[in-house]
Image 1 (cartoon, helix red, strand yellow):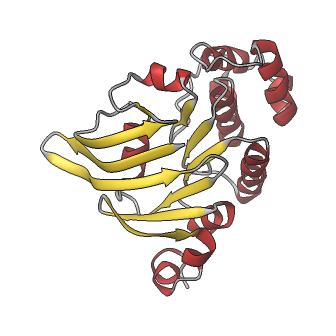
Image 2 (image 1 turned 90 degrees about the horizontal axis):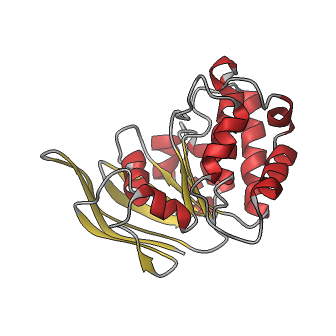
Image 3 (image 1 turned 60 degrees about the horizontal axis):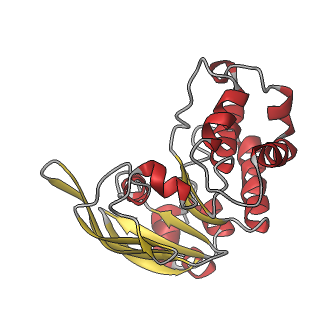
Amino acid sequence: MLKVENLKVRYGHREAVHSVSLTVADGEIVTLVGSNGAGKTTTLKAISGLLRASGGTITFNGERIDHLAPHQIIERGLVHVPEGRKLFADMTVLEHLELGALRGRSGSTGFNERLRWVYELFPILAERRTQKAGTMSGGQQQLVAIARGLMANPKCLMLDEPTLGLAPIIVDQLADTIKQLHGSGITILLVEQRVDLALRLADRAYVLETGRVVMEDAAHTLAADPRVKSAYLGL
């Protein structure tokens, strides 16, 4: 479904991502793990068109997308839920969901059907649909950000640090949500600071260090690797 080959991304004169290659097959959960500054978020931003790649290719469902604008990539079914949620404090929950649907992929389900589905997934958002996002808790805001992405009708959902700054009980709820989304047929590319959680959820994983892929394998294999245990799992 998604294929990244020899991706390079620069910030001015500094190359932040060096020849990263990865694949995400239809129906998989794939995770990118690594320390802060490893290039995980930069890689997602390049895939979604928020940053322009300085080299390499990005292909989604057989089509080159590395030259497309972000809204064109969303229209093809590849949707990015960014780190830090990026909500508008004075907009209501419903307004965020309407915004998410504006450039969504056309399909068999219309706006009202997707809205009902999102409200079934996250009943609290139905209850608080008129509440402004800036007055909500961090966990509730993260649900709004994910729901906004789902309103675009994604084939593949990229989640960047969805549990950042959240309480453990909310983290567990989000993990269940990710499993549920995967069970509904959505392919997921996950960046997650909690490496143990990421490796439990994922089918396959890539380890990034200083902008390069240094390891890749089945998630359960990497979780048992002594190097991963020592560097990322504190074992």
